[in-house]
Amino acid sequence: MSNTDSSVSIIVPTLNEAENIAPLVSQIIASAVPFREILFVDNNSTDASRDMIRVLAASHPIRLIEQDHAELGLAAAIISGALAAEGEVVLVMDADLSHPPERIKDLLAPLFAGTADMVIGSRYVPGGSTPGWPLWRLLLSRIGAGLAYPLTGVHDSMCGFFAIARSRLLELASPAAGFKIAFETIVRGGGTLRVSEIPIAFRNRIRGKSKMSFGIALRFSCRWLLAMFRHLVRGPYRPAQIARSTISSASID
Image 1 (cartoon, rainbow, N blue to C red):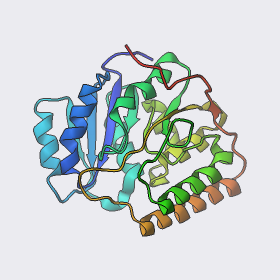
Image 2 (cartoon, helix red, strand yellow):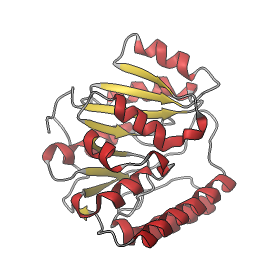
Image 3 (tube, rainbow, N blue to C red):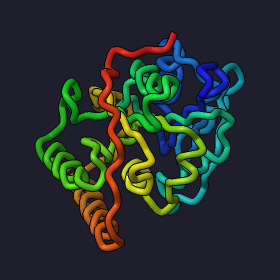
């Protein structure tokens, strides 16, 4: 896999994130990460998100993909981005800066080194954290991740900050995966997918309105449990192979 600025497409699903788009692009560029393009997949925003993306696209390698069917969900947005991507590798992250752009290099390093096929920014490995989370959110997230561990061998398969070869994502992911696309990809990959986790601090948004509430989190948790049950009923899956190399200090020159 080539370590060049033409090999990475960054996919950012958006929904009413006008206040965060310019700061996100600025921080990605400041991180000096090699990338070919940033693909914003907008899911029917009603604010100025699309206008902001178009303005930035005039001076940066940015493309806007308009997804006007809100019911298609997050997984469909990510797959739309992957289908349109020109890079060998896709890196998926949130638009609200909860995923630290300064860690992008560290997610890409194991892929370029050939030591992993998928790398996840993990809140639940040593060094990871969720500062400022309310207790209910932390409990629901940790319980869900813990229940998924026997199927995945991964501590944080619910995280939406990950990097993977574009071809593997399109091979393994399902548009019906909803918010759990990383989980579905890992389970479907089974023993053929080497997964590494690097620690991240998952930050609360500073700008814009959070889309997370107790009710939404509880609904996600129920869907998550149903997804795991379906995989158990369908038959055994071998857990993904976990690359145990020291990654937190890796970087790309």
